[in-house]
Length: 286
Length: 243
Ligand SMILES: Nc1ncnc2c1ncn2[C@@H]1O[C@H](COP(=O)(O)OP(=O)(O)O)[C@@H](O)[C@H]1O
Ligand SMILES: [Mg+2]
Image 1 (cartoon, each protein chain N blue to C red):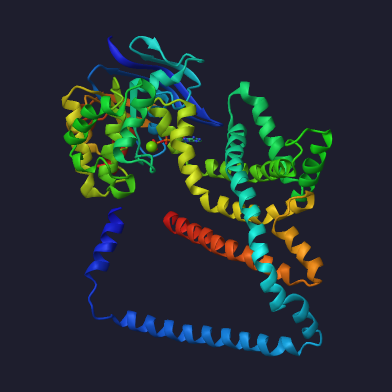
Image 2: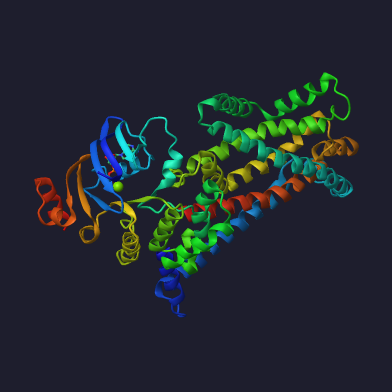
């Protein structure tokens, strides 16, 4: 507060002429940039020159990096990816809400709510303890197997439910860690004003807790975006399954590389952004 | 005896550590009582017991003739009647100053922002913060934050106020502005209990000063008397150290 005001005041007053220290730091920075550039270039050159020397390179290039197959299948893959995006788009809000509800169950303190708390504990233990793909199989094949009428036998519904079950358990744990990270003095201050426990949670603790765990939750949602591909095992023709179809059609693996590129185009920027948020928060805290 | 708040034999322990060892204290309507004593003597704990932030283990706390330490009593309405301000401000960092102040009256008294605005902007004005209402805590100096915390407690229109070393975290040049707020409240006749290290301030304004030592009130007397003619050896030693 007063410190930062002073610091910015100093920075504003710094002379236009660089100080001795600034000159020194600039020269160190230039030197490390040169070294980094040189070592990166050497590695790239080594890869580009050395890999094609491997005995199986030509075969690999034909079956994984085939330009003709790539061009023919990429639009179809991109279209199939829209289904991933849609499944993601309707499961993400459900996951956020369920995760929040489970986190609040686990935090319930009143004795009457003890069953809720037990439920919260059991829920997070079970769904964090199972491989996602197993839950997708059990829920995705098991429930429609009850002989439900259309549309209730759709693998979209039950596949999505499986993702919601698993991911909300993780989101609940992240939110709970956020709730735990709010200092006791905040609850004290709210209690001292005569706020109820519920209002204290809703207006004082949760808004801060959720803000603190935005980066961690973003990482979970990035993982979710990838795991949507697992639904292909129970039917929906999303990008991974579409790539499999093309692979059989062209007898070539290039469609998988195309699918990988499409995933990366989305997940890499999202991951960078989550890291950026995380760094920003760490800096604010220290 | 017509006390606003009376403590009788108040005991509080944390595990094996007994922090209040049978405290008796009377605070009359409109009176200002200061608690002094070295760090760890139990001043904060005593204040937190007074508005039921800490449940006491034994003893009675009478507020206007009602024992509020009765086990099983709902503490919420009592806390609304006794405001407390902490050393570390404890503002809600995700809310502007005015939202910090309005939250509790809105939620507990069902008042709308519009209902509250006239009275609350008056409070901000009175304490020199009229132009800071929309600022967030991290945009305010320590002294400003502490004044917002005081306004937040006052907005509940409490019958009495507790202050726990509210100037101890402040830079020396900011202490004065917060003490001025206390002077102002004193003039209005607010009943107050303060834990403080500001001996000059206690001497100037307190009706009564209590010296706490290891969880007991070793000596209590009118301010002038306690500072100029302390009876107990330990009080003398403490005053010699801090004055
Ligand atoms: N929540 C708590 N749990 C355990 N011990 C505590 C707690 N709060 C205070 N204490 C202990 O009680 C004693 C008195 O503390 P405190 O009331 O803060 O004294 P003061 O405000 O006079 O410095 C200290 O020894 C402190 O460590
Ligand atoms: Mg203290």
